[in-house]
Length: 174
Image (cartoon, rainbow, N blue to C red; front, side):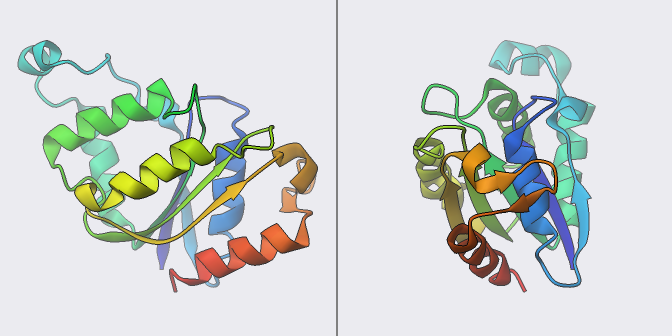
């Protein structure tokens, strides 16, 4: 099984990318491919830019990566209660290629933040809108207080309860 994992952030130190990669590596026997949203940077989407530029190669490449995967794990960073501008822009451009951005793939949606909210607002929005974009949400989990619950040095979950919940979520992809 090929699992595509990424953090919905363009931060070079993204805790969401760390969580997504960790989760993907919990999928037994999976071949994990990690994406960096910085590789898909494009002008901010607008209908005027689309008319001028057409469909950028980065959006086509992102859509192709989703199509090549058997399953997807995304961990959403939350900026002011919503998606990061970096993720939203890639998503908007890609949805212009095909509204079925996730192409019927099974997904696990995660979110984390340094605070106790665990980016749960953006996770709720992502899970709620997923069916409109052909994502089959198999599981979701918000991880609060990332630095208290995840060991940065060993790249492992130190909270056993959250680790079990995360394992249950990724097991749905098998």
